Length: 91
Image (cartoon, rainbow, N blue to C red):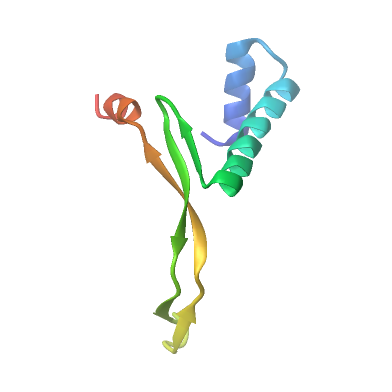
């Protein structure tokens, strides 16, 4: 399922226009990103937890040349599924 499929599914399931469904979907994603950037974690009961993790600087290699290089420290956005979601997936 991609972004457009999600919008279509919500529009059909909730009986709203695609434009309204698009606003809802984009609003939910924006809220998750904003909350994660501010607090570092977003927990949705029955679905899972989104959180920001730190990836430290590390040594690596340039795949084209094989030359050693430093990979800069960065932040990552991780998702951990809830027990309810895992149980549903694993039937």
